[in-house]
Image 1 (cartoon, rainbow, N blue to C red):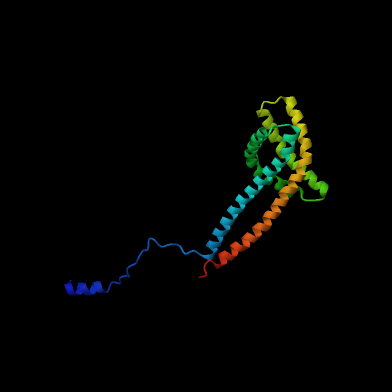
Image 2 (cartoon, rainbow, N blue to C red):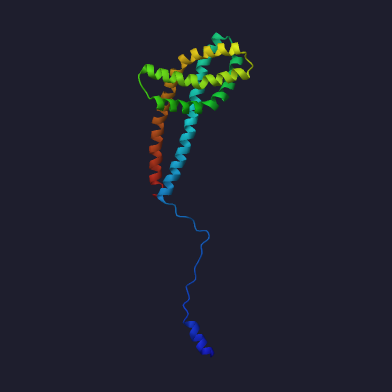
Length: 198
Protein backbone atom coordinates (compact mmCIF):
# COMPACT_ATOMS: atom_id res chain seq x y z
CA UNK A 1 0.00 0.00 0.00
CA UNK A 2 1.35 3.41 -0.97
CA UNK A 3 1.79 6.17 1.58
CA UNK A 4 -0.91 8.24 -0.12
CA UNK A 5 -3.56 5.47 0.07
CA UNK A 6 -2.60 4.80 3.73
CA UNK A 7 -3.14 8.48 4.53
CA UNK A 8 -6.57 8.44 2.85
CA UNK A 9 -7.54 5.27 4.78
CA UNK A 10 -6.66 6.77 8.17
CA UNK A 11 -8.58 9.99 7.41
CA UNK A 12 -11.76 7.93 6.96
CA UNK A 13 -11.58 6.50 10.54
CA UNK A 14 -13.99 8.47 12.82
CA UNK A 15 -12.32 10.01 15.85
CA UNK A 16 -14.36 10.96 18.97
CA UNK A 17 -13.72 14.42 20.43
CA UNK A 18 -11.58 14.58 23.60
CA UNK A 19 -13.44 14.20 26.90
CA UNK A 20 -12.59 16.47 29.84
CA UNK A 21 -12.82 14.95 33.31
CA UNK A 22 -13.51 17.37 36.15
CA UNK A 23 -12.23 15.74 39.32
CA UNK A 24 -13.30 18.51 41.68
CA UNK A 25 -16.87 18.68 40.45
CA UNK A 26 -19.21 19.19 43.42
CA UNK A 27 -22.71 17.65 43.53
CA UNK A 28 -25.47 20.12 42.90
CA UNK A 29 -27.36 20.82 46.12
CA UNK A 30 -31.06 20.44 45.50
CA UNK A 31 -33.93 21.89 47.52
CA UNK A 32 -34.73 18.38 48.77
CA UNK A 33 -31.21 17.80 50.12
CA UNK A 34 -31.24 21.26 51.76
CA UNK A 35 -34.58 20.52 53.44
CA UNK A 36 -33.37 17.15 54.72
CA UNK A 37 -30.25 18.79 56.20
CA UNK A 38 -32.40 21.45 57.88
CA UNK A 39 -34.76 18.78 59.24
CA UNK A 40 -31.83 16.71 60.52
CA UNK A 41 -30.34 19.72 62.32
CA UNK A 42 -33.75 20.59 63.75
CA UNK A 43 -34.34 17.02 65.01
CA UNK A 44 -30.89 16.95 66.62
CA UNK A 45 -31.56 20.29 68.30
CA UNK A 46 -35.02 19.11 69.43
CA UNK A 47 -33.59 15.96 71.05
CA UNK A 48 -30.92 18.01 72.83
CA UNK A 49 -33.50 20.55 74.03
CA UNK A 50 -35.82 17.78 75.27
CA UNK A 51 -32.94 16.30 77.29
CA UNK A 52 -32.15 19.72 78.78
CA UNK A 53 -35.81 20.30 79.63
CA UNK A 54 -36.10 16.92 81.37
CA UNK A 55 -32.88 17.50 83.34
CA UNK A 56 -34.04 20.96 84.42
CA UNK A 57 -37.49 19.65 85.40
CA UNK A 58 -36.20 16.80 87.55
CA UNK A 59 -33.44 18.78 89.25
CA UNK A 60 -35.53 21.86 89.99
CA UNK A 61 -38.46 19.77 91.29
CA UNK A 62 -36.20 17.56 93.41
CA UNK A 63 -34.39 20.54 94.89
CA UNK A 64 -37.65 22.30 95.77
CA UNK A 65 -38.90 19.15 97.53
CA UNK A 66 -35.58 18.43 99.24
CA UNK A 67 -35.21 21.84 100.89
CA UNK A 68 -37.99 21.38 103.49
CA UNK A 69 -37.28 17.64 103.93
CA UNK A 70 -33.52 17.88 104.42
CA UNK A 71 -33.20 21.25 106.14
CA UNK A 72 -36.37 21.34 108.25
CA UNK A 73 -37.38 17.72 108.90
CA UNK A 74 -33.95 16.02 108.86
CA UNK A 75 -32.16 19.00 110.44
CA UNK A 76 -29.20 18.94 108.03
CA UNK A 77 -26.79 21.85 107.84
CA UNK A 78 -26.57 23.91 104.65
CA UNK A 79 -23.19 22.37 103.79
CA UNK A 80 -24.59 18.81 104.14
CA UNK A 81 -27.63 19.78 102.10
CA UNK A 82 -25.51 21.25 99.30
CA UNK A 83 -23.24 18.19 99.14
CA UNK A 84 -26.21 15.84 98.86
CA UNK A 85 -27.96 18.06 96.32
CA UNK A 86 -24.87 18.33 94.10
CA UNK A 87 -24.59 14.54 94.05
CA UNK A 88 -28.32 14.38 93.29
CA UNK A 89 -27.83 16.72 90.33
CA UNK A 90 -25.50 14.17 88.71
CA UNK A 91 -27.86 11.27 89.42
CA UNK A 92 -30.98 13.18 88.32
CA UNK A 93 -29.28 14.33 85.11
CA UNK A 94 -28.62 10.69 84.18
CA UNK A 95 -32.15 9.40 84.87
CA UNK A 96 -34.21 12.46 83.84
CA UNK A 97 -34.57 11.62 80.13
CA UNK A 98 -35.19 7.86 80.59
CA UNK A 99 -37.83 8.68 83.23
CA UNK A 100 -39.56 11.13 80.88
CA UNK A 101 -39.54 8.62 78.01
CA UNK A 102 -40.88 5.88 80.31
CA UNK A 103 -43.64 8.21 81.53
CA UNK A 104 -44.61 9.12 77.94
CA UNK A 105 -44.80 5.41 77.06
CA UNK A 106 -47.02 4.61 80.08
CA UNK A 107 -49.29 7.61 79.44
CA UNK A 108 -49.64 6.60 75.77
CA UNK A 109 -50.49 3.05 76.84
CA UNK A 110 -53.10 3.97 79.47
CA UNK A 111 -54.26 7.29 78.00
CA UNK A 112 -55.51 10.39 79.74
CA UNK A 113 -58.66 10.51 81.81
CA UNK A 114 -60.09 12.20 84.84
CA UNK A 115 -58.16 13.56 87.81
CA UNK A 116 -58.14 10.20 89.63
CA UNK A 117 -56.96 8.31 86.52
CA UNK A 118 -54.13 10.79 85.87
CA UNK A 119 -53.14 10.67 89.54
CA UNK A 120 -52.97 6.85 89.44
CA UNK A 121 -50.92 6.83 86.21
CA UNK A 122 -48.35 9.39 87.43
CA UNK A 123 -48.08 7.72 90.84
CA UNK A 124 -47.49 4.34 89.16
CA UNK A 125 -44.85 5.85 86.85
CA UNK A 126 -43.02 7.55 89.72
CA UNK A 127 -43.15 4.49 91.95
CA UNK A 128 -42.28 1.84 89.35
CA UNK A 129 -39.33 3.82 87.97
CA UNK A 130 -37.86 5.40 91.10
CA UNK A 131 -38.41 2.68 93.72
CA UNK A 132 -36.09 0.07 92.12
CA UNK A 133 -33.36 2.72 91.72
CA UNK A 134 -33.84 3.84 95.32
CA UNK A 135 -33.68 0.23 96.55
CA UNK A 136 -30.45 -0.46 94.63
CA UNK A 137 -28.97 2.77 96.01
CA UNK A 138 -29.82 1.66 99.57
CA UNK A 139 -28.28 -1.78 98.99
CA UNK A 140 -25.09 -0.27 97.58
CA UNK A 141 -24.98 2.01 100.60
CA UNK A 142 -24.90 -1.02 102.91
CA UNK A 143 -28.37 -0.68 104.47
CA UNK A 144 -29.89 -3.69 106.23
CA UNK A 145 -33.00 -5.44 104.93
CA UNK A 146 -35.10 -3.91 107.72
CA UNK A 147 -33.82 -0.42 106.87
CA UNK A 148 -34.46 -1.00 103.16
CA UNK A 149 -38.02 -2.19 103.87
CA UNK A 150 -38.76 0.83 106.08
CA UNK A 151 -37.24 3.25 103.57
CA UNK A 152 -39.15 1.69 100.66
CA UNK A 153 -42.50 1.92 102.49
CA UNK A 154 -41.77 5.57 103.28
CA UNK A 155 -40.73 6.16 99.65
CA UNK A 156 -43.98 4.58 98.41
CA UNK A 157 -45.97 6.98 100.57
CA UNK A 158 -43.96 9.93 99.28
CA UNK A 159 -44.44 8.73 95.69
CA UNK A 160 -48.21 8.90 96.21
CA UNK A 161 -47.80 12.58 97.06
CA UNK A 162 -45.10 13.56 94.54
CA UNK A 163 -45.91 11.54 91.41
CA UNK A 164 -48.81 13.63 90.12
CA UNK A 165 -47.34 17.07 91.04
CA UNK A 166 -44.17 16.19 89.13
CA UNK A 167 -46.26 15.06 86.14
CA UNK A 168 -48.17 18.37 86.16
CA UNK A 169 -44.92 20.32 86.44
CA UNK A 170 -43.29 18.38 83.59
CA UNK A 171 -46.35 18.83 81.35
CA UNK A 172 -46.38 22.56 82.10
CA UNK A 173 -42.72 22.94 81.11
CA UNK A 174 -43.33 20.97 77.93
CA UNK A 175 -46.26 23.21 76.95
CA UNK A 176 -44.17 26.34 77.52
CA UNK A 177 -41.33 24.84 75.49
CA UNK A 178 -43.69 23.74 72.68
CA UNK A 179 -45.04 27.31 72.30
CA UNK A 180 -41.52 28.74 72.25
CA UNK A 181 -40.28 26.05 69.88
CA UNK A 182 -43.19 26.62 67.46
CA UNK A 183 -42.19 30.28 67.11
CA UNK A 184 -38.56 29.30 66.51
CA UNK A 185 -39.52 26.80 63.81
CA UNK A 186 -41.55 29.43 61.94
CA UNK A 187 -38.49 31.71 61.92
CA UNK A 188 -36.26 28.84 60.74
CA UNK A 189 -38.67 28.02 57.90
CA UNK A 190 -38.68 31.65 56.74
CA UNK A 191 -34.88 31.77 56.82
CA UNK A 192 -34.69 28.53 54.81
CA UNK A 193 -37.17 29.80 52.23
CA UNK A 194 -35.26 33.04 51.67
CA UNK A 195 -31.69 31.68 51.92
CA UNK A 196 -31.30 31.53 48.12
CA UNK A 197 -32.72 35.01 47.46
CA UNK A 198 -30.18 37.80 46.99
